[in-house]
Length: 253
Image 1 (cartoon, one colour):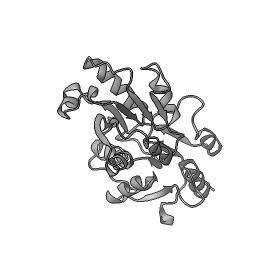
Image 2 (image 1 turned 90 degrees about the horizontal axis):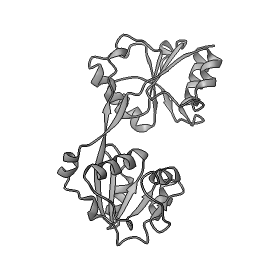
Image 3 (image 1 turned 135 degrees about the vertical axis):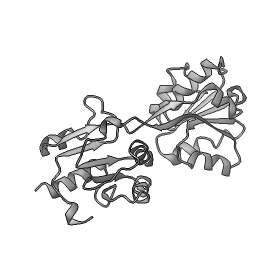
Image 4 (image 1 turned 90 degrees about the vertical axis):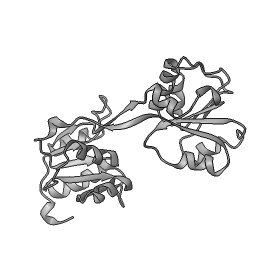
């Protein structure tokens, strides 16, 4: 980061959808610093078609247990099952990465203790859920972009495990932002960077400061020969809000 780039900040673009009322963690920060902050999702998800699912040669009824790690996966799995006229057996077991995901499953099924297995929230706790279920045939409906920890664990430990891509992450249309300038753009995933170039192939960063959350996002910024001005998390800076607070507090003196 050079001093030449550390100029006062008036406007920030967050590459995520507008938060629900009362859930905007940046609200106080923006008010105190008299900033303009806009939210715009650079990516969105869409389900695969029944034809695309069949190409993966997957029959939902071949499996005795289903693993969910997101609400999107739950929605698209049960919607696809309905479209394919598949009714999951009542003895199917469902494993969830956290309580929020487990509660959401109840939108589609009547919960029974013997069918629902839920992690306390940590990855280690989640993976220990399966120790006593090695005889199950597991299906993992997921996005085309996902962490490798779940498949790696199951393949390493000899489980009967099949991954099913049921929805994909795609770049959103950002054409209306072509001539809009922000002092800072905040990115949260490599897919956000991909969307930037999908929409604006000849994009030049110039004086716009880039904030990147997480190592994979920061790597994508570097691989595209862009300048990372505001990394997060960092030592003493656990969140993107903290990183923005630190940076703006420094340059807007």
